[in-house]
Length: 524
Ligand code: NAD
Image (cartoon, rainbow, N blue to C red; front, side, top):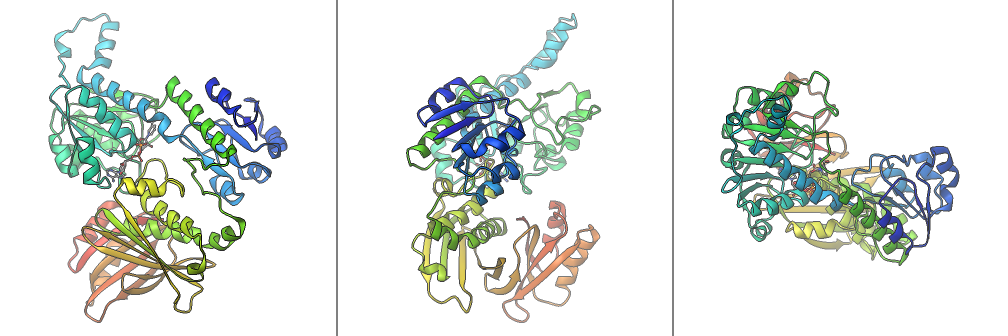
């Protein structure tokens, strides 16, 4: 293998890469030079400086793997790489400890008012009384999101003799038990925690997860830290809570706007600590990232499968051609069901009918459905390689079946998800584009894309109008509407494609309408 290291990475990673073959290090390479020479390489290692655009990727005729030493892949055109059959790998676990340690730093700094005490001494003052702190010992840590980073924070807080309560609706009870934490609802965490720390991805569900109502519930001594993503905490609500001493203090590493505006109101306050999105910045995280991606390239050079593939695993060309048209459908079907269903998914049943049922190696599609099911709730996207493992860890079991009859279509895929609250299914096919043909027992004709909305309601005159009026009142325009029903005067379902994302408070208002059983917004 010939490997190009196009951005500066830790020496140890470069040293290890030699096990894969010839290594060229050119960390000043320009986009033009890269476009000219990329066809020579089998693998490329980048951080964030090198932009792998579609134009460059299209010229990468021999490239098999793009390795991002780090997490974010905004500088890589994933679709172009997938189209070209190039794996894109990253190193999501390389920063977990580093971010957890930064979180600990912020929690301790909050408890002991370190940043204002530091400023006070440098201002020539000696205000010992003003900086009375609290211990972490015997306090309750409230964790929102118990993934890679959340669990590392819990491990560290145990050493400080703290008790941990966790809100993570996608974490199985058994896993929480093994980790020695109590799984509970958000309200209980907010009410009881002395220190709250956020480690969830930013999704439509977590946007402004912490806002006015949530600050109202917290103890007036509570401290909150966010090292996850800006926008999970509503910064206007945080400002008011801090100004009115509704909580003890806050620490942010991430912001709704980065960098924050020069006149950001939070800068006026003493009871907040701010760091410039540096939670993941340590020498060790950079070294680990380089070693992890070097290992991925070595694994591929040996004929194995890398672990952190973000786009797709490789399959033989013939099967690949037959399955490719269904890959997008599968991801959308998984994502649609995961967002539409209530409760934690325990079982997923996938049935392939028609031509697809004849293909032996169909596992890639099931993996892609799983990827769609779990990605709406993950910070770093899962891929077709690691989705089954992550699903298993999260207690989701999978049943795969085949049927000959595709009811006149070339192929049909039926996905049924079961939670402790309900069973929800969707049947889809690909007719040029992905289509959903049936949702539960209702026949529909829906293109799963963009901003969507599902309401389940009583099929009586006026129900549809009331929902439409609510959307209209809030300026949410309906692009496409599909309704289906079990029987006249029975239960009905409405599936809408909207021109913009539906805000959570509008969904709440619709849920409260008479005759509406359930309403949910989806982002596909
Ligand atoms: P992860 O995917 O391992 O864990 C995320 C956890 O959040 C999962 O357990 C998931 O079940 C849970 N979750 C998802 N939706 C939820 C919801 N609505 N309510 C409660 N829990 C929910 O991710 P991670 O690697 O631990 O990363 C956590 C966050 O930290 C991400 O937002 C990531 O982008 C961020 N991050 C920030 C930095 C930084 O520099 N500040 C660096 C790395 C990661």
